[in-house]
Image (cartoon, rainbow, N blue to C red; front, side):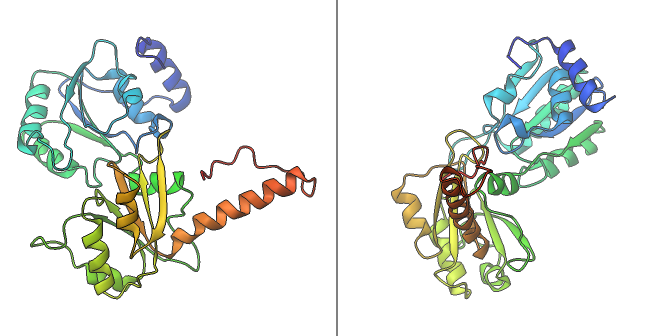
Amino acid sequence: MPADHNPLSGMKLLTALRGDGPTFAPGEVWLVGAGPGDPGLLTLDALAGLLQADVVVHDALVDPRVLALARRDAQMQFAGKRGGKPSIAQEDICAQLVSLARRGLRVLRLKGGDPFVFGRGGEEVLALAAAGIPFRVVAGITAGLGGLASACIPATMRGVNQAIILATGHDPDEDGTMDWSALARTSQLIVLYMGLRNLDKIAAALRRGGLPANTPAAVIASATLADQQILVSTLDTIAAEAHAANLTAPAMAVIGDIVRTRQQLLETCAKAALMARTGQVTAPLENSTCDG
């Protein structure tokens, strides 16, 4: 849908797909997850909010194609945060949402991924509730799951893991951070959000906790987007290899035995494609999206 789309026709299409969706009332704030990047992963309720909002307060990682779905006359206000860079204080963002809503505007707070998964959505919804502002939370596909799928790494697999751990990539040397040794002892899949900068320290902490150095690990940069990059290595070398490959944020790290499944899928797809070309099977895999 182009930036100059007609919001009325967009709402008609949305109604045909979803039925009578939620109505965005004046003076209300919606906290909406935009997904991990690819606009195809946007939910119908997120689209409904974009088509009705008077003002969109958005994060840095929201894809421009998603922003282009908003009403042509909607105000666009940037409120992004990027690690290590100057950014708007969270208290100021909360105050901004309250102020805009009190002006009778339909306020869409648009966040990458899911607003309640490392998105500070909990802080914002508490501030809205304290101020008596009506709100709605629209879930989004979090990068920790959408990114894994785009890299052909299952989040769970029978016989491999029974849990998935979503963690922020804080410096293990900082006070009050999580017990990395305890995470290592679980032997379950660990997905690190915003962990590229501290990946070497985190990997060392996990090894000290007993996680073998040869545990499969991967870094997925710009997950789900056209410039997505995937690096597969092991726990002891993943940080150095990610640095050598000049991988940059937004990126997440994935640590666990299930990472091996990606290579198995690539090899199986390649074998099946070869068999199809030689006439040994009749179902080629042209539509498969397991990236090399």
